[in-house]
Amino acid sequence: MPRSADVTITNRTSGAWIEVVDAGGKTVHRQVLPDPFAGQEAFGKDGDVARHDVPDEQFISLELPWPGEGAQVKIHARKSRKPQFGAAPKTSLVAALPLKPRPLPPSLAATAPLPSVRPIWGSTNPKALTLAFFAEGFTAADMPRFHQLVDRCVAAFEHSEPFKSHLASMKVAEIETVSNVSGISGTAPRDTVFKAHFQKDIVRVILADQRIASEMLDACFRGSAVCLIVANTTDYGGSGGAATVFSCEPTWATEIAMHELGHTLFGLADEYDAGGQASTMSPIEPNVCGSPASSQIKWADLVKAGTPVPTQTKGGPVPVGTPIGAYEGAKYQPSKVYRAEFDCKMRTPGKPFCAVCSRVISQLLLQHV
Image (cartoon, rainbow, N blue to C red; front, side, top):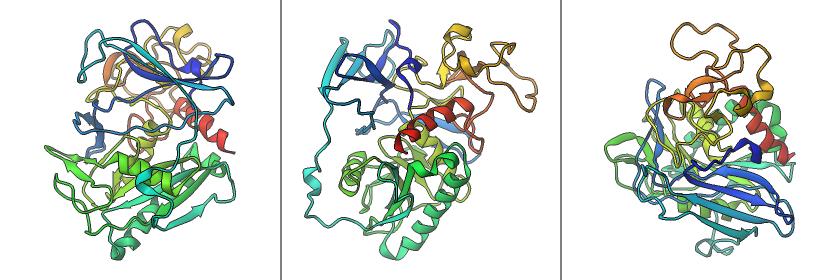
């Protein structure tokens, strides 16, 4: 989980972010809020990634640290100087809310029948974060294929750092949410649990009803959990949001799942340098920064003395073992935004997480030991 110092807010920052303040008024956590109108992410068949406009209503949920009695959540929104993504707020605003546990949603009362929940591993740790895989577009007869895909994802987490080093911090469960029809296809919702469908004119983006996902997650898990929706299609597709959505594509399914969790759960920015947009284009996420100056690099403690910054900018072969530094090009911008390493799972599917992203992921998971 990013520390408050990792997210830099300046007078030129636009968009929205959230802060957790303890009883004494000290900010203990700060992170950017996704813009529900800014778009969804999808992987291309060649492994490229892109983010596209999505006009549909989105529902956002976040896991925040609990600093104790008297804590508050402060939600900030600041108008962009050059509004890019829908209607920007006319004035800055701050809303302070007390931290309270959410009650069970009325639409999913405790007396209602809930889907079967099957724990896979990690069930002995009461503080563990649950990775909850929900079936979408799977009938009862389809469930063996759903279990197979979840098993693939579990194996990927077990063998991928930094998750591999923090397995005791996680629980994995699969939830047999049974749909009335098999598969998702086309651009219109079908009679499935989460109403998933491909976005019109952008076939690789899979949309799901995020509000249903959030309510289903609350009904099935009263502790810390994140929703991963497995869409029953082998066509390439996925998206981010309150819940991660990804298809059963034979090659890239697990990569889509881990990359999207980087956004949904850990507040990481995309590190590729084209084809996207965010709630604020300011590099306020912990894995990107707006200056190569040593005093402004958020991961300066990881940069070895003598490493040139900017490190490597444009073109040329990349030597094995490239150092941690400040590589130009990140958060959909080819210049003036920097990332810590030449490559990372937040930039290229199939690559490992860089040291900075790994540290952010580890910081959150260590809270669940």
